[in-house]
Image (cartoon, rainbow, N blue to C red):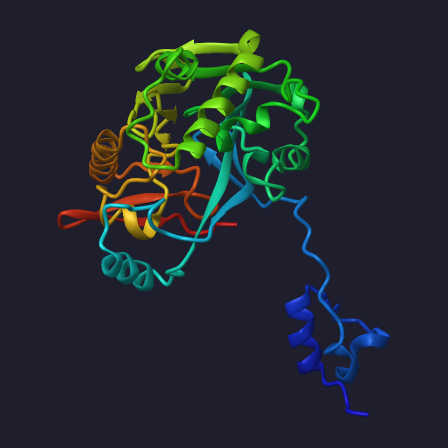
Length: 335
């Protein structure tokens, strides 16, 4: 029988999530290398989302890594305007896979003396890997009934599916759900114009049906807001394009601030270098690109801190101008 070395055990243990305490005196029977090859690692748990805590002035803020969206292709769903060779070059230079895309779903939670505010709501719109918002809130000691406000950047499924429980009842029954009037009106009108989307027609129908179902089911809790409106420390910023009523939210406390940009940007490796790159789910692609460039220029000039729903967790950082384009500078982990 071969001898099990601490080095080999640490190697296998790290891969399989095994923790070795400094005072451990015995090893599990299956740790012999002859048997390791016949074992399969345990399934990873998807019930405990990562949390990131920080401050916005005097306010407590948290980001819950609610889930991810995984696409098995890059184009044509992302950057359909880009030349394949250029897309490949950009992804490689950012040390990203060139044949697939994985987007974080980051939910911002704000807690102050006025209550608890969520920015978007995640949910099971894209499969079983989603829907961990409540688990994250539980770790923060926040019961669903204690959520005061939920601000929606827009009404796409991955931002609103967490608003209903499996029984189709409100997941946050005491919360006011805030959405721009332009967004509410668009998705609930008789024949919204989706011709600007390049996504398959079946996807377009799913997007519309999902928005209608959730906005209708939660009508009693919904409150519409106007571009430029102030809600306490939050100012509503018009950022239309991805959807007609898409909004960003500027949060200010003292000298500190954070700009919540929702889906104004999806891919850090592509859209900072090329703000003109759109997605197949943009309702007004040209407008989305114009909005993105305006946001980047303003954030870079003001050295503003931004938070993105889909950039790598926790989605917080700055925009830096580089000639005629931009780059994403993630905020470093501070413990």
